[in-house]
Image (cartoon, rainbow, N blue to C red):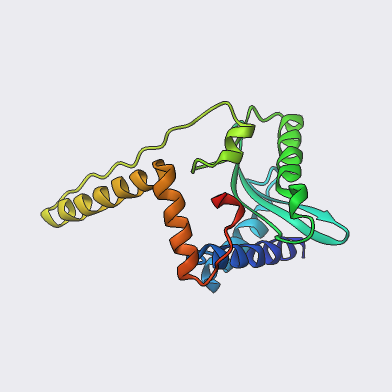
Length: 188
């Protein structure tokens, strides 16, 4: 079925991308994949599906995939992937984002949301920034210790990601640890 076809392509694209980046494949676990298959398949039974998949197909091959959720007057792109192939230079992801945004406008959505994470491509499309905050409320001594550890980890992660030099170095080291010598597009 179409959900399986789109998700199979997405999982394959992400597996390759994560391997090149030297990071763990968060979509690799069979239970995670099963969850997404159920989520998007079950949504099809709704009058207005709360979760939707979109794909851009060129020459019989899926080149870009997005998975989105619908919340009120907002269409939220929760994840996306692009094929790293001979058409990568033509920005298939940008074409799919354009189609998604156009469909969102035609359907009456007021906001197309790229979800969490700050990436240069998101700033090319969006003029609204939503700031997210993590709130930890420890209830026990053990909870306070855990909250302190989690806060320090979050601060370190924010420091690294907000420093272009350190973030670029982190990505290079991560890639080298995975055995990938050539820089990826996002490291340029």
